[in-house]
Image (cartoon, rainbow, N blue to C red; front, side, top):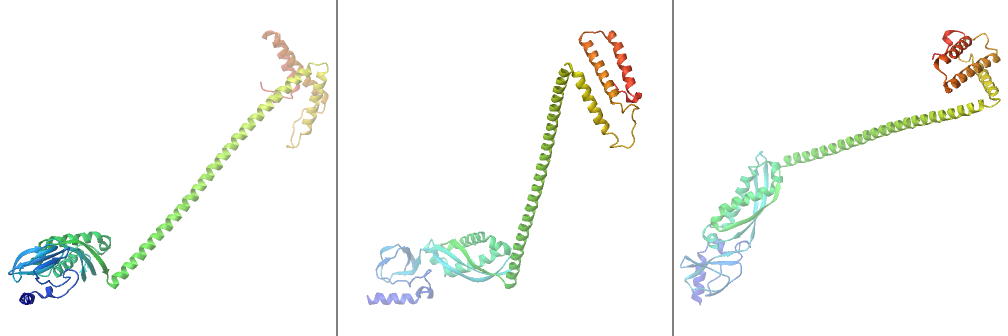
Length: 359
């Protein structure tokens, strides 16, 4: 047994330094175990075994047996998903702005054989590949697109890493940019740009508010004018309808009064009442003379009320006789002397031809 342990210790002396010390919990959780003939492999680990310096097999989780001295556990690979810090580095964008950027890389070993023999230090290789890919991808876009297209940038870096790490048996699951630092002057310029953008939005919002207020005021004035015009229109319609109703009412009242007057004139003393009414109207009209104009032309007998009433009653009797003859069927030729007498009587009444009524 001592010889076996001595041989195992001697074999460790030839292992690389990264295999014999505890580096990180990412790939090398512990140093390679010794060949104790009966070995228990933990879950989610792969032990690479060499027989006489040549690859022999990969031990699966559980109980395994090895031949002492001949078999040697060369590599221990963890099959869990691991996270690797990508150190901070400088990168230049398409618009010549220098950025300091770092990230986190998530990967997993899918082929322990390639991960052991395809590359000497898989962690170092993946880290360097992530840095170079990140610089290359940042050099294709502008500074403003770095923040806006951060997700697309991560996907591009993952795709580029997977193409190169396929030969190493490692799959890159995702890449996340953790921190982006800008130069002080660029950061100040971006801050000024943000402030200007906010002021622009505030000015736009204020102008839109003023515009909406003006529109509301204009709409209110327009609506008030429309309502006022509609009110005026309705008022005129109502006034016209009122006047029409008034005219109709006055016409009906006039017709009723004439009907009553004609019935009253048929009475015994109806003519006396009519004469009195004409005299009163004449006196009332005579009182209104010379109120609106200083120059008047009056007939010579304007002060003789009896004569004026007699003339009015004569005219009335003539017209009444004419209507009676028309109702009794008198011919036109027979009524013509009456019309001539009426015309002659009217000619005597008026002072000149201009005062005659035009029929």
